[in-house]
Image (cartoon, rainbow, N blue to C red; front, top):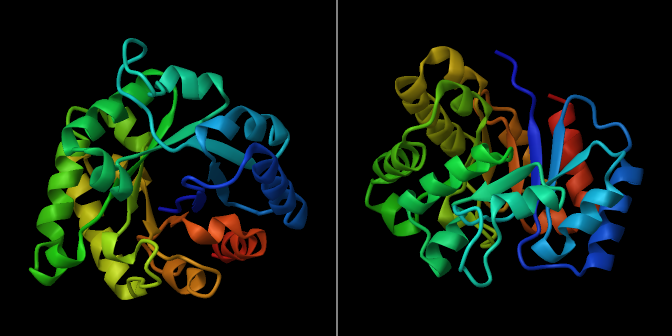
Length: 254
């Protein structure tokens, strides 16, 4: 079935409020009509409200970069799904490899955050991916399957249909390395097969699986040409408006 491509830009810990507002204005006015593409930006929490307000009449939606699984409470420094939604977010990135690597994110906490996102009206973009060592050891599918099964455990069919999965090989994030289109497609197809087992063919065919890992203007078109690659979760290139627009154009040309 035809799935609407998504291009999501993860700004990570970059850009002040003013710089973020300027960036999204440039993207919007450079490319006013993206066609059948969903476009999302994920600014730092400090800029969420300002970016959401700036994009009020734009085709660009806003995501949070993370949430806590509890609604409120004694969790100093954390942001709940309620807060992110209140600040204007429609999506949330969950389980990014940097969260797993530096901040102790586990498949269990990913699962709790995914459920919290749905509970409070956010669409989760759930990240999975293997390290270089895991790939070299031939454990790619084992690692990915475990992350998907445990991270998405206990979801309803309706929740499965609305979530987004992002395959981000850890060895390709911020390194300049990227999986070939064929390598990425192989993993995406495997994830889709697993999703069929978890939630059935109908729901699995609706789930968008994005690729992330040094996606740029030069390689986006080739990556997005594969049948199970439904878009991209873009890091560094999302901070460069011309590059990000070129990636959006690549998706719009599908």
